[in-house]
Image (cartoon, rainbow, N blue to C red; front, side):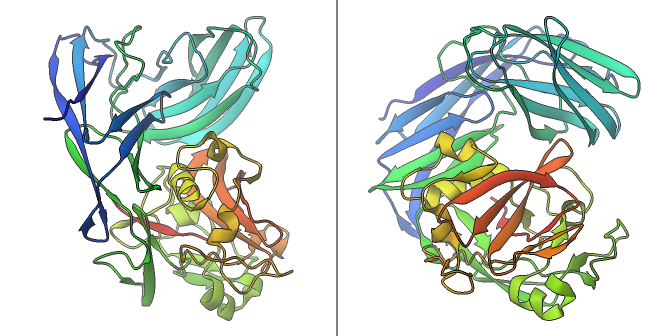
Length: 441
């Protein structure tokens, strides 16, 4: 019998202060290539929320996690508040969560111990729990303040070392409907896990790697897929809104092979609105451009006016708009130098990676001899973009939204005819980009 790695984490139950004991749950891993069994060499599990990772080596393919309840915190169900960040003190990064009783604008402010303004942002947030990843700079004490409807909540953030060379940043992680669960001050082992944490699981076999993102709450069975360059097994095409889309399997991700082309066409001088009708722009206001490239969408229309990342939005049922983290998995899967989970994919506002861009671009249609090799049949097209000042870059650039917001912006990707790399940046939600869908896990 293979030895199971036991990970123990403490958490506080946000309730009436009762003690509880939760049973262990297990994550079981296996792998296939299309439908044929694949023997895994090893499995790496990365906690994308808190940081830290752990490895399983064949024949160990089961990760067990135990929780021990400790006294909880009693708060009103409708109380706006910022929860204490974890971990605290901060080594490299920390997670800050806040509870919003009703959708409204929220101001976020970070200051240092002298009261100097470090970061400031304002953004609309839906009701529920919202989490942010904070990376400190070279100061050992920060104050994080959130304001909602004239209510203010503030926490202190301590940094374990003030010798950091990092630049302060605050990145939106995501939302959930329940209260966040917090681990105790000390972890039993170096790999920490708290309910609600997002895990990146990477399976390795015969020199290949395949990645799965998950937020486990109970025992789950996860199957890594090592098939590539084939239609998704069991779902070769999808018919939606009168159009037929092909699918493509890229390891454990099943993508629509084409950009979405749904909705009623608007002229570029018409605004998309929350009117219950899907709407799109076509490059240069030409319907044939939508046939060739797919539609262009402002972020809110693509999301169908929700801010929850991973939403279905304008995708077919059973599919969702890809998140920033899911794009990172794709990039690591197709790049020949930087693998899945590599810190390279967390960089932004610059071309990054080694050759992910050329491996995703189509073999024709790009200007200046900038065609790709489309190694995984992703078929990335240079559909261009619509800004407030007009249409640009068809033939030379392709832009894709993610469903992950960050303050008043949203994360996006673009490919360029002059680069074999791929860019990650955040853009105004009023810009109009292409959209792709990923099949629900």
